[in-house]
Each structure stands twice: as structure tokens, then as C-alpha cells.
Length: 87
Image (cartoon, rainbow, N blue to C red; front, side):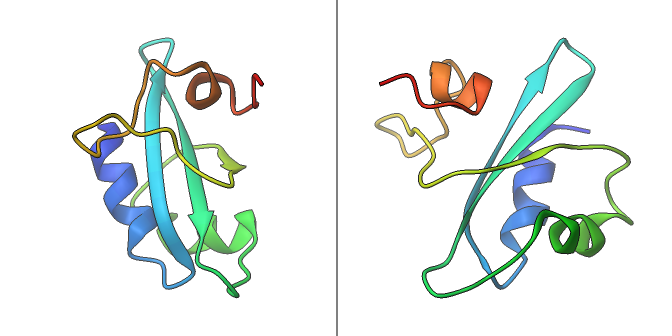
């Protein structure tokens, strides 16, 4: 499964405004999702909405996703890698 595919699946959820996925250890993915303002969604709800398309993934709540100038997720940013804010 490629990170872009995971991002596309997460973006289809009506409560999700933005999503990014990164490869971890060459075999696993970690996905990040940003909720739309005023929308509530739990990780279990996201998992249920994509479980037919993904075998395993991890979702971390984010207030934003670091982006590069070309609007692509910055997969090298420490915040994206760890799911933690560094500042």
C-alpha cells in the first residue's frame, strides 16, 4: 500500500479536511488526519470507513500537516515523522 492511496482514502471521509501518510520502517504506514472545523470523528470511525481498503494503519490527531511549497506533505518534517510537535 502506497502512502498516497491511504491519503486518498482518508480524504473521502466527510469529517476529514486533510490527510497525510508516511512510510515507517519500509513496511508500515502512519496516517495523520485533520478534522474539518465543527466535525467530530473518532479514530475507530475512520478505521471503519476504510477497513475494507487498508489492512493496518495508525491515525494520530493533528491540528495541521506540515506541507512543502508545492503543497505536498513534508514527509521529512520531524512533526510528521513522530506525530509530536517539536516546538
